[in-house]
Image (cartoon, rainbow, N blue to C red; front, side):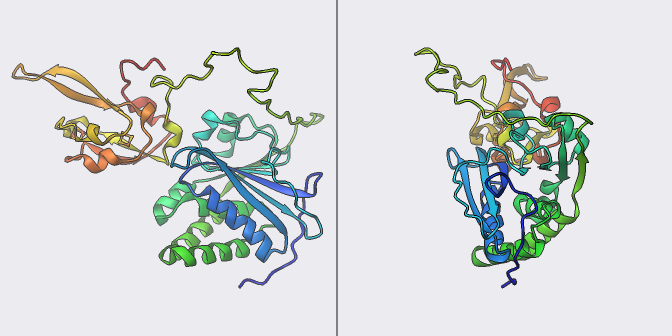
Length: 337
Ligand code: SF4
Ligand code: SF4
């Protein structure tokens, strides 16, 4: 067991707590990362710590928030609410910026860690973050190469940027956790952690001279007695036009090569989300038939079932790059988005 040290927190809020919020989607391992972080703090760094996650339906692809708190040993840790004004935000999936205010409440001198191939300046442009440190790490690229998940790469990057988080303690926790359940994955996860630690790019943005720090405004509940909509009004209808599954993809999508397609429809039969777009065409002999036009990526959650089903090389798994889906997708005719 790693020796327990008596770590002191260098920065705390008015309750004496250091707080981290991880923004993720189901399947990327944020829940386990939060658990390992809190345990490393308590067991190996001598801090008080707590952790819990908040998610909707327990399935891959739905948004997940994980909260971690630390306190010095003499401070009681009694907060059990979600972390609203974190010192650190870790974003496990870049597409979350499209649907969530990931930087909500981040402290002016806080750290925003993002799994991305973009630069800190590009992330700042997207998020509008005014001050603080932006840390970028290609956690997905590392995880693909090491055949692991992004969570241990994100932990490595966190240890690099959060001064009191001793990488040895977190590494020990990763080893202990994986040895119990998946011993074959210990070494690859340790490598992923070490690469996450060493492959970060970070940049700090100082406030403009004389600028006032932004004050945190708690989002108002949607359905308080003052904001409740008139009875019978559906303010957020669920239907096939608004449905957008792009943030459910875990970094990969199917790529379509029409030249290799024999239009057998095996892909369409396994796709759970009716992503394949067909149109009637006439072939050289004058026969009318249905021909596959492509994939409507708005509905694609990246499960890759179609790639497995395709008997030719018309479908292959591709690492999703920004703009690929918009440039290469085909829209269903009923799609107005
Ligand atoms: S399974 Fe492959 S070959 Fe068959 S229609 Fe789909 S993409 Fe084309
Ligand atoms: S990966 Fe293929 S099967 Fe899965 S949702 Fe996307 S198009 Fe459908």
